[in-house]
Every structure is written in structure tokens, then in C-alpha cells.
Image (cartoon, rainbow, N blue to C red; front, side):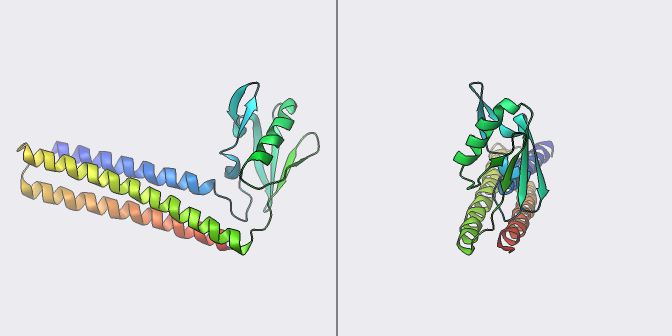
Length: 187
């Protein structure tokens, strides 16, 4: 039935978005390796307007433990440096007038364990979002049955499909979590 197909397609799309959001959140969590995504959450007060750092500078990981930030406007150098220092990343910028260098310090064992907890919480939030989508779709299916638009057998088949899609998406988040935990714990 078309309504059931629409609900399933919508559920898959919304669950995919949950995985994507979880993945993006994982990228902004610091590991021992330099990654330009670390600076994604930083915004700079640029002429009175909060502007994302990646709009004001090119960011690259020139070495395994070094990020370089090259502002498009050299006048923004001090503001960028200040924003990085005030962020929760714990990085100390140094600049030579043209480029800001951010050495990525080695993570301590204690900090690694804290980051693993943060990553697990982010993964759990992603799974909760997926389960909420499942709950919404099952609610809509029950309404279709109540309104007499579909039969019980069709509802059960659709519920099985929704559960299968939910399991696939939950497993995808678990896989992302395993990779991120390994990345954090890597010395």
C-alpha cells in the first residue's frame, strides 16, 4: 500500500539523517590525530557577526599532530587566535603573521576515557533519535489500522520492515562508535 511505503521511505530518510548527525558530532570530538573537523564548532566575531572559522580561513592537517589555519583576511588573525584559545578544545595557537599553527597534544589516558564516555553518549543520542522515528512510524501505522485503511496483516508486515530498518541504522551507529572509540584509544 502506498501510505505504508511512504512511511517506510520517510523513516529511512529520517534515520539516515540521525546517522549523519551522529557522524558529524563524532568528527568534532578530538582524538590524538589532527583533523580540520575539530574546528567546525568554532565561530569568530568577525566585524560584529559570528562567523564559522571555516568561512574565514583554510584549515588543513599538514602533519599527524598539527593543524594549520590560514586566514583569508590577515586582519582576522587575532580574533581567530582568541576564539581558538577560548574554545573547549584545549589547544594553544601560535602564529607567524601569516599562518596559525595548532599543535595537537598527546591525549592522557584519563582524557581518552572521558572522550570515550562523550562518544558513547553521542551514539546513544543518535540511537534514541532512531527509536523515536520508529515510534512515530508505528503510531502512524496503528492509525491506518484504526481508520480501516489497512489490515492487521499489512500492519504486521510493515512493523517488521520498520524494525529491520531500525536495526540496520542502530548497527550503523554502533559501527561508527567502534571506529571512533578505537581512534580515541589509539596511542
